[in-house]
Amino acid sequence: MIIVYTPAGGEPEQYDARTLLASEASIVARTIDQKWPAVKEGLVDDDLDAMRAVVWVLKKRATPTLRYGEFDPGVDEMVTRFDKAEVEGWVDRVFGLLGTDPNVTVDTVMAALSEVPDVAADPDYARTYIEKWHAEASEGKDPAPAAEATGPVPARTKSAKKTSTSSAPSS
Image 1 (spheres, rainbow, N blue to C red):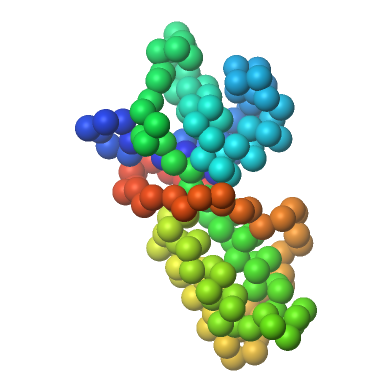
Image 2 (spheres, rainbow, N blue to C red):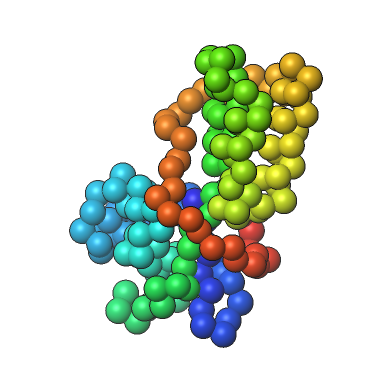
């Protein structure tokens, strides 16, 4: 999960929650008084406390003396985006539903995936990956074996706004 933090008047910064160490995840969880699974779920839902705590801990790597109270972004300055691995897992699982139900067609799968690029850290990669699956599925081929399901398809509880990207690396 990528958190895009765009400070008022500043350039977008990307923070990859997957890069947290276990000790850092524990600091995040303690700081906002939640268990790590709840923090991860909060990131999917654009929870401000979860995003703020993760970005704060990752910022502390460069500025160890940064206090939590000193990092107080505006409510519209942070949004989460799916990294490449999350996009692939999501798309693989949805296309893996083809053939499991006569009501699940290539068209219904494409409709279900239409907003994925909007919530991806790399929208161009998401579009390309979906198109690869679409082309193969339209020809009745399987572009790759369906990924083993590692959990449910992430659900967004609200629509996310688009952000520009920075040069910071993502997965």
